[in-house]
Amino acid sequence: MIIIKTREEIELMRESALIVSKTLGMIASEVKPGVSTLYLDKLAETFIRDHGATPAFLGMYGFPNSLCMSPNSQVVHGIPNDKPLESGDIISVDCGALKNGFYGDHAYTFEVGEVSEATKKLLKVTKESLYVGIRECKAGNRTEDVGNAIQKYCENHGYGVVRELVGHGIGRTMHEAPEMPNYGKRGRGKLLQEGMVVAIEPMINQGTKNIKQHKDGWTITTADGKPSAHFEHDVAIVDGKPELLSTFAYIYKALGITSDEENEFRKQPLVL
Image 1 (cartoon, helix red, strand yellow):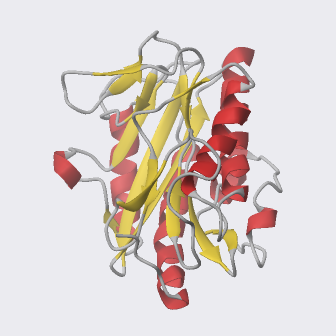
Image 2 (tube, rainbow, N blue to C red):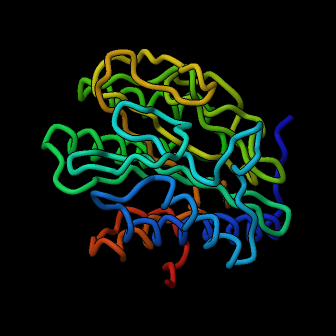
């Protein structure tokens, strides 16, 4: 069942989403060669708790950490460990927080040191596809309109769009209806309505769309070992249009990046 949120609930969800955004902004300053993902995970757990929230992933479905940390060919659900990051790596950091009874869920793929131009392009196209999909997330459209836009954009660049993993509704539970696939046919899927809140999260592979799950029950990698990128925003439908609850602005501030990519999805400028 799709759960419609009131304006007041959406504002509470914005608080949860922005705690996640701030956590990723803090992590952005720490992602560098020689740092372990387990170290970053501990920083995130402390940061989330210090901001009056609970790490959402810790213990969820038995997951052992606060962050999903997925380097290089890992698509999602990577478990933090002691292995140091190396220059040339990429690392998808997926983070969740629970505050005021509502969840926030948000992800960004970081470059570690100097990465190849081919990898830079994968990250650029995947992040662009996120906003291509968000533009379709409006009242009267359907879930597969969003997925179709993402799929076409990424496949036109020669990339593989993961089928087995999808975005989702979000609210008082982390994963609500509807599923938000990153592929599909226009006019199909659940109807998008005023007050819906969803997590849109393209998971895009440099090579094949196919994936494999590892024996730990969590780690998922590309079938061909090529890199995968993952970006995610929480999006509410307000006045029939998509409105971002999360932001990459804290990440960009930490990395010295200037961007206006989110402006069209905000009624008023974000105050950092």
